[in-house]
Length: 283
Length: 187
Image (cartoon, rainbow over all chains, first blue to last red; front, side, top):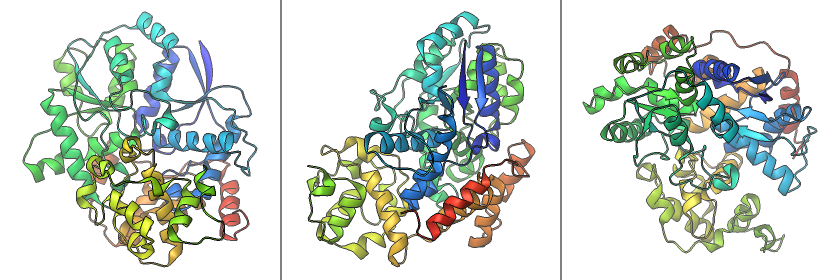
């Protein structure tokens, strides 16, 4: 169908491996060729721009310069990397910022969720859908940087985004209306102010439970790791029961497209998704 | 008018510095407090986002740069999108963190700036973030080895922790960038 450059980013080589694997799996099924950028390096998010704006620009620009050697679109699955790349694109293109690496602002930078929600790709998904996710109630969680700031993301419905909801509907799942779609999970403070993060996690998980979600769906590796890994310790603190699997949207795409590795991806989660997916007859 | 041109270049008030560096029109804030009302972390802050802007207007440099607020702001941009005057408050927080590190004022949060500096060290030495190295180095600085140890083991068993960093060729260029910045050649 088409070929794109691919910048996985650091998380996808570590805690977010199942995001990387499912993107690769889904792309293959949809005839999208992924070309991983050669010798890519960290985009610097978030520590670089928190502490040294100029350094942050150079760290991101190096990768964009590599991508600019081809005229392919650049697919970026991590929303923190995406946000940095778009910010640097804006600096270079609109403010004529001079960067050390030969980057001129001419790479179409695509966040994975936006990319997979393109009309042409949705058509293909519709055609190839092997197993509709019937009966699965999902809370689409967009978080912060997938939608904000709109001057960077270009998203118009930033207070109540719908594109992931539409994708989930197309896969046969039932996206639920809920009020914490774009609230922050605090992932950037996970190592340093875990107390704050726990409070934000409790709010999000409780609201998704209240909406009667079977699982929460995200396209951000930080949100996923943050919300997936701490449910047990949070349960001890709040006395609530969450048991809410946090899935990447690409994992659910893979499941609906009948990818044979889906179980392997789900096995890597700390909060087990296989139980609920089996109960719904989807695995 | 461009925010950067609103002040005489010789003007060196705290307000003019932050406006020039962030590119944001801080003078436009009329204290509607929407930023603080929507901030998910406001409850843990020592000065609320709208108060940060007011303190900047008044030139209270030390008060702002030594606050907890600038370090626990999670950069979620909720304030920025809701500001009726289009002030990108989250971006101003970045500017303030940049200033705070260079100011010599003691940071209001202990661990957050340490985390950022360890994070940057990891990029400098490896070119990419290797999560395990990052966590171990951060823990060796904060001397808190037992927090999350159980969780770490669980994640390891799920294959979520990569033991060895990847091998690739971009690291040298990254070191050059860092060296140039450290020597002040690229600013």
